[in-house]
Amino acid sequence: MASAEKFNRDLADMARGMQGERSTNGAMAVAVEAARDVITGCEIAAVSIVTRTGIETPVLTHPHARDIDEWQYELSEGPCLEALQNHEVVNSNDLATDARWPRWGPRVAADLGMRSMLSHRLFSSTDTLGALNLYGTAPSAFTTQDIHNVTALAAHIGVALASAQENAHLVVALDTRTIIGQASGMLVERFDLSPEQAFAVLARISQTQNMKLNAVAEHLVRTRKLPTPPDA
Image 1: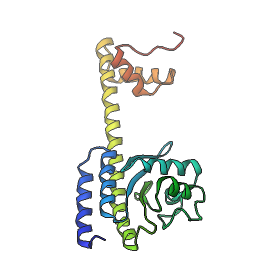
Image 2 (image 1 turned 60 degrees about the vertical axis):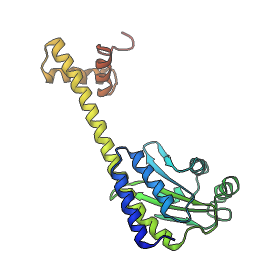
Image 3 (image 1 turned 180 degrees about the vertical axis):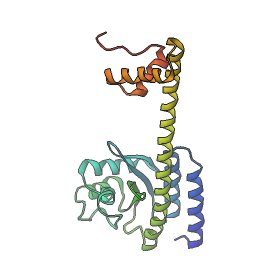
Image 4 (image 1 turned 120 degrees about the vertical axis):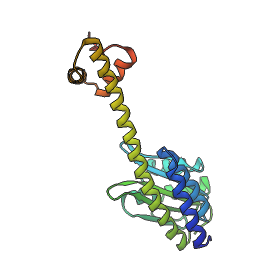
């Protein structure tokens, strides 16, 4: 088991490493590698993220983690789902015999050799963002101290994940604004319109053709033509 001093140093290094990443997946990749390194019993680490369409596992230290998570979603049982829906921390000392997940646990133990699992919810002050999932090949791989350490890890990862997602949304918003500005500028120049009139043209086409405004703008910038109705 790592000393408290070493764990704190590793935690600080992880926080700085995540801050240096520009993308959400880049920050989470730093996190899962750090989790595997600093939690003694951890053989595989992954982060599952809640999206608008469900749950995804975009970053992992081994391909088995994706199989493990996909089986949870397929069977609707498992510690990651439990952590996301009911309990902040979920620990299993032996997946082969854990009665909470009678179909998922034995399958993971038999097919992939994972016997222990520790899942910690990742959240911000307002939202559940995902879960940090750790797996070990030995029964009872995670000690009480490991669980305390994972709580500290998860707090840092949750903050980094919330920040990375917010930055990603800002970048998308800025890109959308830029493409709409370019399209409006083309209409201003081509038809001698005011900026307000050009934007109104884009908005009207968006409404009449049931297209998103940024899609209308992107079409104009890319093709140099306004989109026409399908039956035109």
